[in-house]
Length: 328
Image 1 (tube, rainbow, N blue to C red):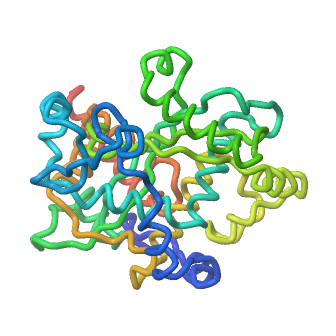
Image 2: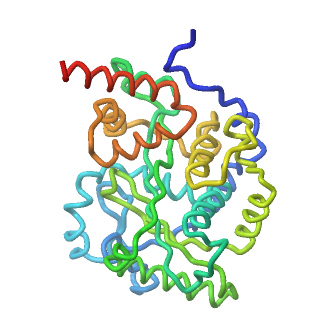
Image 3: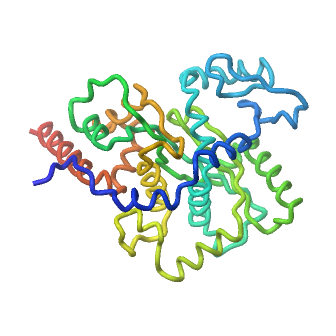
């Protein structure tokens, strides 16, 4: 009998990885110019301000235009100031054309862009990312075992949630609306007047920090997705067990991205990093059935993605047993 901790095979993903993945060189070339430096507080760019921004002296990962903006941001930035590697991983993520296309599909699906025109409407979604062990057995040991004695574990970036902003939330995001307007004007000037413009608010460190990224939803991407849906075949199913019945949903798009990243054994995608104590704690919080946001988001991911099926079923059994014991 197989262990409940054992993951399902991911040979489909590994076999297809080399066909799909861009080279590390291509990713680095795109990453060097992918984001315009902007103040983390007021979101004004160097071009807007006509002056050079300064990086945080401790983490070298965020920019500020003035001492006032840095002081205003410090209460939020302080808890994650040393997590400087995450913004670089986010820039790497959005420099990967394959993963970018899938994120665009998330917008198309969640905002029903195949069925309505939204070129003059701000589309904003929060994308939660996190770091978890690249070895699924290490993940299972942290979640279900006694933990790991190793001080250093290899981690990888994962996409945990795609959540559209509501109209009420947009009203409280004037800076995001301004970033969207600037991106809209740039695309209009290039002849893409009818293509939707979206804004990804990529959140990390339990949502305490984030990077706002303008997104051009190209009409060609929408046409490709529309044709694939009409044909009734999701090519992403190849990476998810080979079944042709995998539906086109935001959830399957996220699972595709995570499976693709996991299949990268040589760090070709440049999305590997060292696991941190805070990353391990989120997994332990899931095991403890904690109600903090990061744990709940990860718990939902475990419940829906195939690779976690066995360990999640075991986790549910333990939770049920704990409840029964409390009730006695």
